[in-house]
Image (cartoon, rainbow, N blue to C red):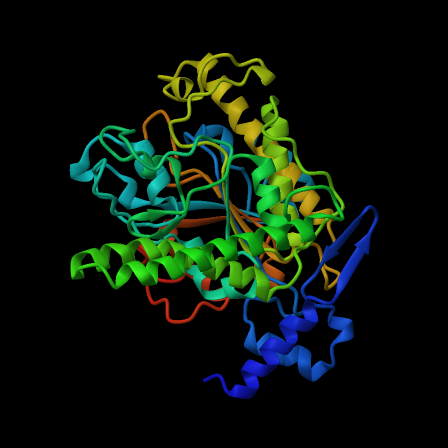
Length: 463
């Protein structure tokens, strides 16, 4: 039970953390805590009060990254033993960071299987990936479940300026019919606030950057952000005053409708209050992205870099990134593949088509590996790397795209979890719900009272 003294200490620690800055080459970035500047008792208290940290007091970050259409199994799985495994052709780009990656076999999402619902594996692949629940097959009656990233964000989101960050290199769809009668909300979103509310991801790098750090050039972003908040608060004050006057003239039913409308207004107000609580916006000395690049590789790289920057500045500790929705049919002319990815994934065992899908799998892993290497090269506040103090799940909601299977999903877990993970291994977990992994990740970050999640049967051990 938290005491008033605990609450006061928490406020002091948060305030103190915002007054410390890390100055590097070409950048000035806010950091949460300098362990060397804290008395040992205060450092211990920080760890006791804020379990979303590593043993050294550094923030513990969590991210989930999805790629579409499964993988070519024969070219995905490593060979050899747990520690002395040989990376497959699709995964060989991970060699520079293999000691920071676990390759998991045997993780399943049974609720993504057809059952009585029939076709729609792409919608289920995405919608079940972080929820672990059976989706309601409908274009209008949306019922999924809260996703694990949001479970974590709801528990630790108060520690950062943004509870979570949702990114995509895809379209944004939350309505209409997509895969075989399923709502597009299932197929284009992996993060869910609750059973009916997806967390819509942002696809424009410029808008992501401006949301995190404000608009304008370096040196003016904080001032611009403060002015924008003041303008919004002025509008909200007017709206609330007008609503109070209007409420006195309405009947009971209309008052309920007005209250529903004002719920959204209050949400904006709470976000303003959160921003004010953390003080001036962090202003990294980097240029604002211009928008969506023409090059697909550059687009993916920029979005990965934004996630890295959000973690480095402790703007958030929870993120999701949809590289493309399951069923995505874009071509990859940059690597000489002009056919659509989804079309190719139904290869019917034709060797030429299998080779092209494997090349796409490899391309996605190359982008992920480059991101991991940048994370590994970035020093965190405790002297460890940013990657060491993170847990990053990379995978697809489909296993074999040719057959639309959801057993033995292609899943990687990168990072050291601040010392909690046994990285550098290839581990088979038999036939185990992927939701078991999510329970373990929630435990590690300090989420309390989560007995079950999705279709979990227990915690995933040996991670």
